[in-house]
Amino acid sequence: MTGLFAAALVSAGVFPAPPLEYREPVPVDHPSGIPVLCYHHVGSSAVPYGVSPYRLRGDLEALYENGFYLVTPRDLENRLMQVPRDRRPVMITFDDGWEDHCRFLPGTGELDPLCALGVVEGFLDEHPDFGGGVTFFVSWDKTPFGEDTGEKLNLILDLGHEVGNHSLSHAQFQLISEDGWRRQINGALDRFAKYLGMRTGEVRALAYPGGQPPRGGAFRGFMAGLTWRRRPSVTSAFVVDGKVTGFSRVLDGGPERFHIGRIDMSLYSVGHLLQWSNLMVAGTGRTGIRSPLPWRP
Ligand SMILES: [Zn+2]
Image 1: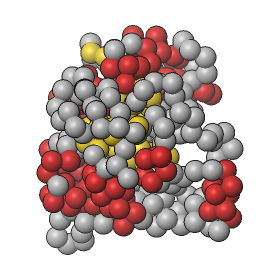
Image 2: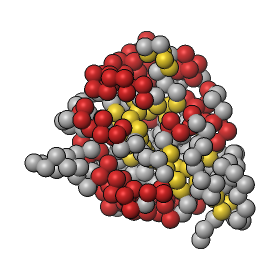
Image 3: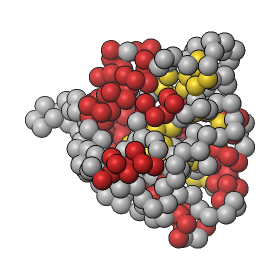
């Protein structure tokens, strides 16, 4: 999105004004990468950072039609083995654990088809070859998903999606010490364990609250060494910076897996994404998972 176009949409009230630190996407110098899309509220697009369920459904359709394949953070650990050769991995994430991410219809106990999980499940029912699932990053500064937290967390995992850690109280990691990071990450895992028990081991991805990692570079080593009940607390961590991180940085198990870029989808559309030079290239040859998808006009 150009700055002018973005400004026009903001002034027209279509999109909320971006936070001041938000930057235009910069194509990375890797031949290709994994776009990680970040959604917040799924309901009214008038809410800051919100998109409508219909917009989410449209995004899923556009990604599917353009050859993408859903993966989750745990798929990074198996080096995306399951992604078909002619498909391109994409990650979809929802931040904060809002009620509109997972809601039951009153009186019936059935999943609301217009909550985020309902929209995704409806699309996957019709397109079972779209891949793995989506990720819900949950913070514990409120009751996650409004009510029925345990039932909903387990339902998300039962359906093959992923639950991620979005901290204990949504504290900005730039403003707290290493002790604070430990408390925010492991304290959240303690809360997950009350509802998930042994399944808490599946909560391994972290989304930094506010989308900002700690300042400096030392946090990568801290994250790599942090443990909870004798296993790693975090195996990958995500920021919101409007960038697409290259494959080599996230698949080699190195420190950059604690600084994976995400794109705020209240500011960008799938249409914009498809125009970014490091995602699609002219030509048809694709030799492996690291190759960009051929451009499909
Ligand atoms: Zn958040």
